[in-house]
Image (cartoon, rainbow, N blue to C red):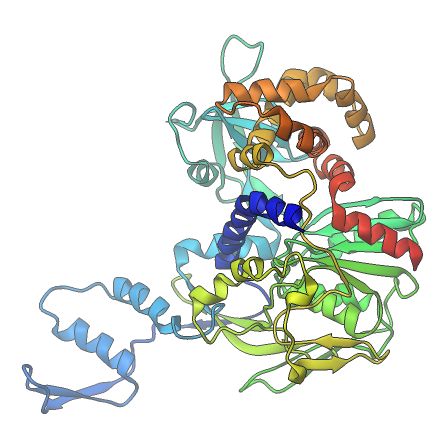
Length: 555
């Protein structure tokens, strides 16, 4: 027990990093949304009167016919000693209006609306490349097939030197700023100067921006002769279509059982989750229902169109699976349709509705809660404020929940029973049927330091860059892994890490050898054939997935 606790202490920086990333994700979660496009004028047009009164200093008091907020705004605009911008006032007031509400009601300024909406719509306009900042240089990892950059001849491994007239290499420019420069309205042109290994002079491309898809189904492949694996990273407008395309691909390969991976999936559009759940359920079975103070109960039932009713299924979740992910997992669990494996999910059961303003900004307001088929509200408490709400994952670690299922204390009032007689609990996330603790096998101080510095990812790109002529011939993860196994890659990585300032600890390296080699190999494979290369390789050290494979094989 002490050894396991020691490994967890070593592993703590990794958990903290994950939690911080999750916190950033939570700030952007626009999940469980049913979009109702209500275009409204500014809120400060209500009439009021000013009359002599008792307020000290001014000799006037407000007698609002509307409300204090609109009246105060108008009073400031009319009477304040200096000129005031109504736009600045609105931008300051709107977030404050929502501060005392739930953690997921948000105001989105017009300048941020596109960034918030892109994950939901499933596309944006750009040049169609994925890139990495390597030694202060924009290095292209991949071009999207048939995308704008590939069509004009941009290649993986190219370095972007300039975007239009702006130098972006060697100037320590934030990657977000570069992304903004490369994105733009569809059919507009951006001029990109490229350095390519072996070319004496930069190559200049004029690239016409086009719609670039954002995929939410990361990968779909067969883990064995009868079991398919599908990884869904978010729920967007395109997710159901992508899922069905993945199913068609797996059915052609004889799939009989399915593992659906919703780990690290923060949610998205609720309808995408219910449409996927529909494929597994019998006609008339309840998928989810929503209800709010001003929203009567609305039930979503399965239809007759499901094509996966006879396929065994397990769903993978963890502490960052939220909202639409929890809808899908809850529908499978509460209908006794399959097993949920992993750790307790995040606990986000609120439905947001969107109101658009004429200036392009938006308000996403929580209008209802969603409930699983047995009647569970899986929204975790937020009465103690947003800070406690977002630090909940830290508290779960401290209380030992990530390593011991019995550390969770259930309230009997939150006990529910499925039609098959299984007890399930509400009040804060989906509890899995099969609990899998955080895996600390292979963890060491050296490995944690490598991860925190991003050295495996950076070395994988460096290695790919040097070996691209050999690696580009491969089209499968197995072939890439076999090639790298012959290259004795670990000593090369240790030397690379040493050059970057991390001295080797060979005792730690022996502990972490397998996880280091597998992770680096998976990153190299992703650089060559994208997620079709990454996931089949990383699966070998994914303890939760391996337990899922063993579990579904026994079903």
